[in-house]
Amino acid sequence: MIKKGINKKIFISVAAIILIVSFSIISGAGFMNPGSEEDPLITLSYVEKRIEQIKSYIDQNFETINNDSKDLKAKVDQLSSGSNNINTSGEVTSEKFQVVVAEAGNTIVFGESAEVIWRSGKATAIASENGGLSDVTGGVDLPTGEEIPLNHLLIIPRNDGRGAAVTVKSYVMIKGVYTIQ
Image (cartoon, rainbow, N blue to C red; front, side, top):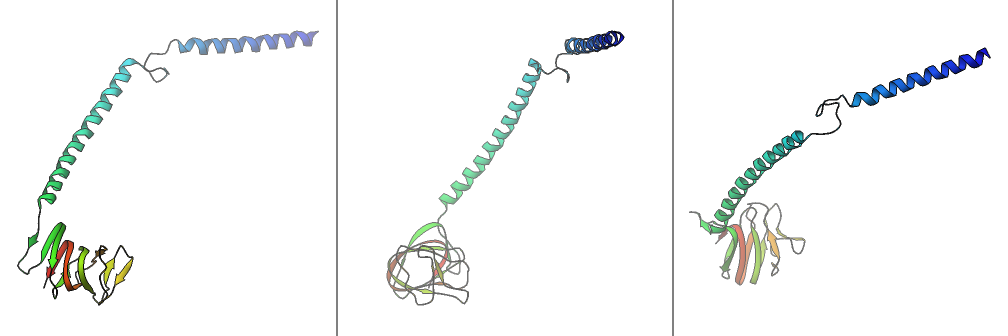
């Protein structure tokens, strides 16, 4: 009997302690200050403050984008208004494809990064010790004496004397630096 009374007292004591701790935890949540770190809910002032920060961030980036687009437009206008530039050595620089008429017997020497499309006529490639004309369309390197195929994009990687010997009057589209001899 004594054991039953002691077990009952221990059970009632533990239950009372659990109830007191639970009640204090629950009632403590009601005493938290709104907007504090302990309060899990956010306040209207916090939301408004964050919205203002986001608006400011967007405005700054929008202004940067506008300035960048104006700079880009100015560069595009400058490039599109550009035409051929001819220097004293007879080199021609074209920022966009230009149609060039080459007579039989002419030699066209291309500069670094020139792009060429042979539209009509005939010509043979002139290679350098570093290689020939890069035929991007055909996926081959054209060595000296090889006939240049029509409507193939050719790219000249270096300014090392690569070019074309015109055998029949030709129309050629050229972008970049070139010299007709």
